[in-house]
Amino acid sequence: MAMELNINKDSSSIYELVTDHVDFCEICHNERHSGKSVLCSCNHSFCQACFTDYFYMMKSDYDYYPFRCPAYGCEKDVYKALAGVLSEGQYEEFKRLRKRKKLIRNPKVAWCPVVNCDGYGIKDRDNKLQCRSCETEITTTVNPNAKELMECASLIECPGCGCLAERTFGCLNAKCYCGIKFCMKCGRENDRHHDSLVCLASDNDGNISWWVLVFTIFSHILVPLYPLCIIYWYRNYWDKNYIPVVNEHPWFYGFVIAVFSPMILVFSLFYLPFVWGWYCVDAMFNGKEAKYQKFWVLLKLLLYFPAVLLTFVGFLLALGLFIAFVPLYGFGLLGYMIFSGKKSKE
Image 1 (cartoon, rainbow, N blue to C red):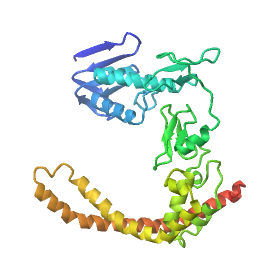
Image 2: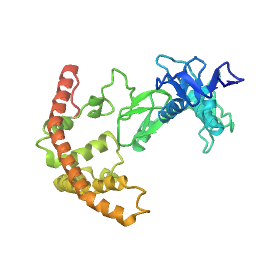
Image 3: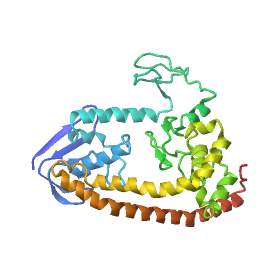
């Protein structure tokens, strides 16, 4: 069996590339898998295709450091095995990102504030910091208005390393480069003490407002005011700069939105299915119009109206489920407040 042995000079980590077959792959569990395979320093072997797929999966989650062996129960850092899988440029980029993530985990490291400088500094015995690239003095003095500035910019700080992340609409759970999983709403670490459902209805101090309880418990009655409630929640609990003109006269614009909420709800219910239906049909035939343009355009038009109808039905089902389950969520919040002893925020 032909074998090429590679030894990295700066480490004792050894991996092998087997050019004909491998007896057993720890990922796909195929015996005598054809093609190249990778043997890591922990003696676990993998198909090269499986190991490459594992790398891209870990890359999508920013799991560069440590790059653990994909074998079950193995915690060995086997990143050097990627040298035989990736191209030279990809491997160098991987090592750069890996080093950066390793530095992020170090509490003594601070990044250089100079624009276009990728340098960093490490605290010495006198707690002084100097960029190792441009030799700029780095200060760790905290701006007393930092919290307000972060809220205005829709930024949240990682509880592990202090890196800033921008709040965007979507899932509350986020994972930082340093490996810490935290909540994008309150900034706390996602552990067994963090309840995402309670956090969703609470402010940054953990208080649940009375209007949240009213809206959730009586949501089946307040259906026409859904747009107002959603906009109010989004502005107060997620992005205060959403519709910035409201900041000038909040009560006036709140009244205007309340008056037009039923119209906004009906308009959204009928308008969005047409838009999303077209996006769905267009995505199905993306890139296929060039060769048989007339045929694909005709097929698009034939499928468009069924897609709109299905999207509209989906919207109605989602609205029905929302009306049915949100009151239960509200009673759950009320029970949580009663048993936890927390008071509603006025």
